[in-house]
Length: 145
Image (cartoon, rainbow, N blue to C red; front, side):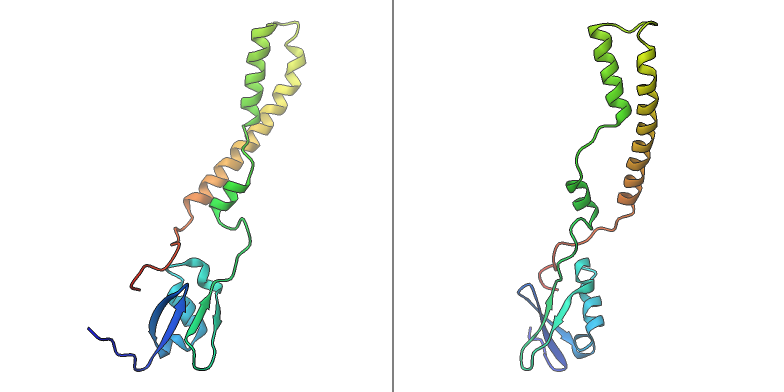
């Protein structure tokens, strides 16, 4: 099957060639819009046009940590402060025991751990909500597009 290239322009993205109608290829925003559903990073892509050459779409590098996955990977692993305090208390209880005479020394630290643990839990819940509402994006344009 032969494809007519009349009223079409050759567009190249990452080595893949695509023949698009002039109505789309000659308008930068329409061209970006045509490729964005397959690769969200192309919403701000650079369009390179040179006389007598195919149109080239060049993906602009984004800021680091903008995607939820990158954000999760770059953040250090943490343990809820309330859980850490619980483990400290259990370890202390096993080694020396906790009774009414030494329980008072832990009261302030326990209150701080509860407050920090509540903030930590709220942050985790906020992250979970943000991840739930993220839209999946493709890593590239499928062959044959």
